[in-house]
Amino acid sequence: MNTRVKLCGTELANPVIPASGTFGYGAEFAALYDINCLGTFSFKGTTRLPRFGNPGPRIAEAPAGLLNSVGLQNPGVDAVIAEELPRLREVFHKPVMANVCGFSVDEYVEVAAKLDRCPEVGWLEINISCPNVHGGGMGFGTTCEGAAEVTREVKAAVTKPVIVKLTPNVTDIVSIAAACENAGADGLSLINTLLAMRIDPASRRPILRNVTGGLSGPAVFPVALRMVWQVYEAVSTPIVGMGGVSSAEDVIEMLLAGAAAVGVGAANLADPYAARDIIAALPAAMKKYGIDNLQDIIGGAHNG
Image (cartoon, rainbow, N blue to C red; front, side, top):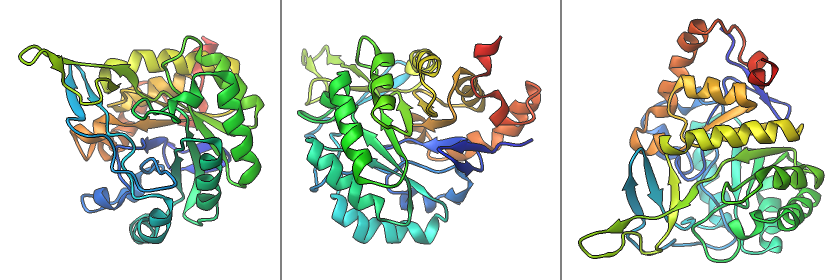
């Protein structure tokens, strides 16, 4: 069974990529298992300056899912380069995906340019979809013009592949995906979390201090699959499909919908071995469905 796929010209041993915000900077999970079994992973969303994130409570449970309003807590790009990447280099021997966040176009460009110079980084995932910050983030990802501007400016400042991460909290994700492709994006990641909330009946107040947060987990998988399908029909750039993926069969579904690689997010928070176990289960799932080569089935459901 051949689990290899290609993402923006780089071959991955398998399509499984822990999603940003669910895998830290890698070292935490490397203490549990050999993370070199992964295709790659996307490290924690990184901004120009350190961020403590949103005040708590910032996690809430939901049926078949999880709400988070962490708010891009991270040590800032300079600390990531000086401290996190050297630590990662000791435990992970493949290119990593750098998740770039910002509150202005200039910040996206500055952070992306700094990470572009790091030999550990293979792809720049430009996060214009975070729903848990005020200003920036999803604000750029909800219009074609904003998404295209960030894409164009970042692309002009870097040499490595630019993968733009899209929000599902829009009426037409296809037009935004096309705008990013036209602005030079080398790939697209979708979806980020769905805007949601919970209320505590006892206090009669929202559970999250930020009121709303991003819903992830199995509840969002059908929505994510639908959006990957629609975007695949409209663009030619590779897609990293994500949203509620929690099994090898989910990975196969995402590939059939059009994803070239597959992000695993909330499953890592529920079970730190989730990505490893999904990879281990892929050959059996491939045998079950008569699949010899994963690369061959990408977009396969569109041909039926």
